[in-house]
Length: 220
Image (cartoon, rainbow, N blue to C red; front, side, top):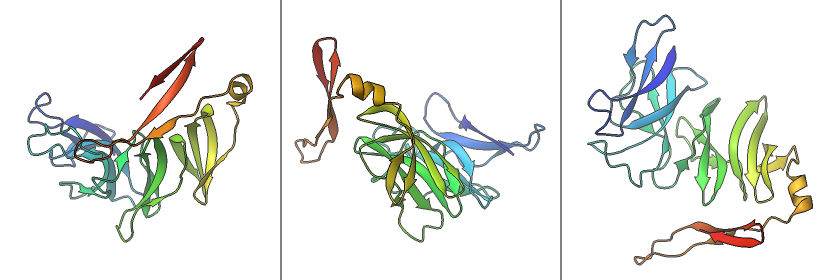
C-alpha cells in the first residue's frame, strides 16, 4: 500500500487537522485510515506490519487550537483505523521533523530537548517508559539502523555536520569534517539560559554569539 497525508474533508483552510490515507499501487482501494480528529503526518508501518505509526498533534475539536501543541508519536491499527492513540507524553516530548524508524517492538524518533535533539526509543506496547538513546550538546538531524548499529548525522558547537554512531547512550564520531573550522577559528560557545516568566514558569533558550567580520553579534 502507498500512504499519504491529506487535509480532512470538512475544510482545508479552516483547520489544521489532516488525515492519513492508503491506496493500492494500481489506484484502487482508496481508504481513509484516521478519523479527522488530529493533525497527522509522516506515516510509517511498525516492524510487525499491522500498526501504523505517525507524528501528530491535537488541535482541539475545531482543528484550530494549534498554538503550543506538542508534536507526538501516535499509532493506529491499519486494518480497523479510527482515532490514533498517542504513545508519547503530550507535555514532555516534542518530536522533531524526521521520519519514524521502526525497530522491532519499538519506534525510534528524534525529539527536541532543551536546545538539543536526541534519539528516543518508544515501546509500542507501552509496557515501559520511553528511553533516551543519546544525550549531549548536539542536534541529531538524521538516523538509520544497520544491524545493531544506530548511525546518525549531527551538528554540535564545533561542527556544521558529522556522522556518528550511538552506543551505550553516547554519540561517537565517525567523521571530522569540522576540523578545518576549528583549525582556523575558535567557535564561540552557546550559553544556556533559563529565565522565568511572571508566573514562575521557566523559559528555556540559548544565547548564541557569532562573529561577523570584526563584529560579535548576540541573539537569543
